Image: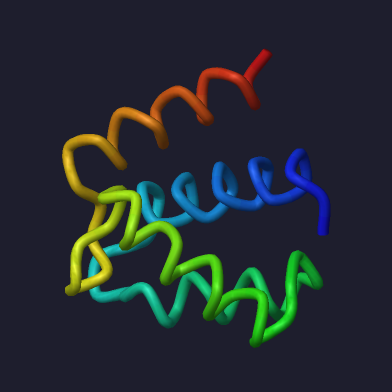
Length: 80
């Protein structure tokens, strides 16, 4: 996976977390993205670790303020 692909997957993941329904968790969002073929289970684990390390999601799998801002940026980008 190149850097551009990784950046796109991060955006999609953050947006998925932002748009998750009440009662859904990080595992549900990741599961849906894996099922859609966006990435594999091992790629998902690496990506989640990276998002946590970058301070975009917390240990509970929720967006941080920084993560929320990035998710909103991604949403605006995808709406163009």
